[in-house]
Amino acid sequence: MTDPNTPDATPPANQGGAQPTPPAQPAPPAYGEYAPTTQPPAAPAYGQNAAPAYNAAPAYNGGAGGGTVPGKTLGIVAFIVSFFFGLLGLILGIVALVQSKKAGRGNGFAIAAIIIGAISVVVGLIVIFAVIVPSLNAATTCLNDPTAVVQVWGVDLSCQEVLEQSNR
Image 1: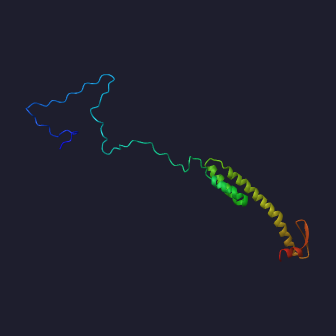
Image 2: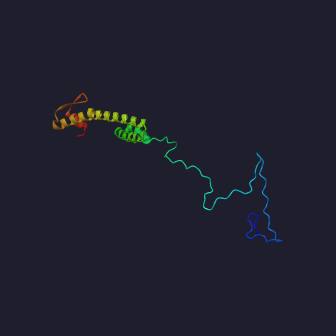
């Protein structure tokens, strides 16, 4: 069986001894006319990629739109924690601010956490030295001299009363 698209490998037998004549070439088209092609376009060779070339996919940058700020979440956590635990909020705020500065970005929550944490630490130290230390001094004085009179928060108390209140 022969394929009409591929020529026969053997030439047809010569009938009558005359040479076969090649087919006549079509006349060239006039200016502006459509010239039909006589041969279909060639198929790609084996091993070549026949798929069209596309641009490479964009690189993943770790966030949607590149709007993420390193340390932003930690800055928000530090801000909330600084209201309850000043020293911990101060430390977390500093860490968040350093992360943001390395990326070249600002972090308002981290700065607020540092300020609130620092104020909390200072107020806490003032309270410790204003309330607890005088009480310890009064207790120490009373332990050394049980008959003495000490002043606690502006009130004169005998050491007997101070020791009874501290259950000693």
